[in-house]
Length: 317
Image (tube, rainbow, N blue to C red; front, top):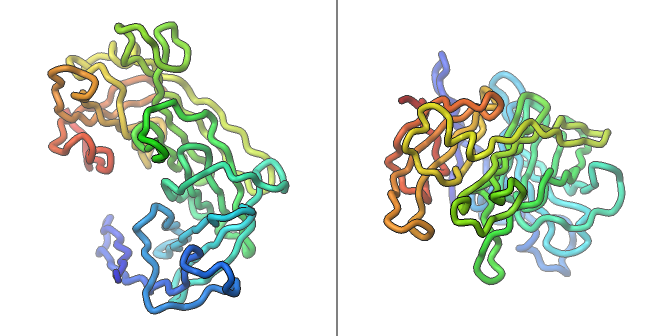
């Protein structure tokens, strides 16, 4: 139904556009439960963009690997299916891979509900993230890879959501690469007026929040541990030079800089659902969370609900 192209920007050389071959391996949910376990070929290629389960990993100069993960919907949750297109190949390779816990080889209890993002790290690692609970780590350099489930360092903040709908965590959580062998996790969460976690009933502190960052060094055989980098409190942010009259509300849609993981871009905008006569101007702010410095602010022409998917090429005053 769709053609997918891999585009590589110039960066001092001629840009390139490469047509990816279609992946004609059937999805798990499309197969009859009583059918044989070997995936069948079909006339329609897989959709690589419907879900955020497809990632691109640079394996070398001019070489990239494309991988799509599908986690099973029925118990047991001990395996998943991986479709991989390796550099120079014209056919996708399908593999059923085991899922283990990063602290051991025990049976994994299902802890996630959906893949929210695919994150590539360096030239080896792919991570598939569920912002409610954790992520699946795969070393794509291994001949027989495994998926290692790693919990996130903190539970998500409680939020209202309709019925059984899955709450959207993109507005307050982000995981990204932090160098060739580590990931950075960002959480924007409400805090009480006393400084503790959770919302407060105090009107003066109704929009109080903390921005907390953690780093995790990725390992394939050893247990991994999150290290808290620091906490930026809302009072510290609002008192920074040049914050001026920007809205004193929680920033949303964090985006970690690919050049420096301490630098994070946020969207700041008042919400008319919570603020009478809200000014719905959307601002993009760039903050160094380690040095606690406001680096730049720029007004965005996008709506609040769509600004989180975009990052301006260059922020400026």
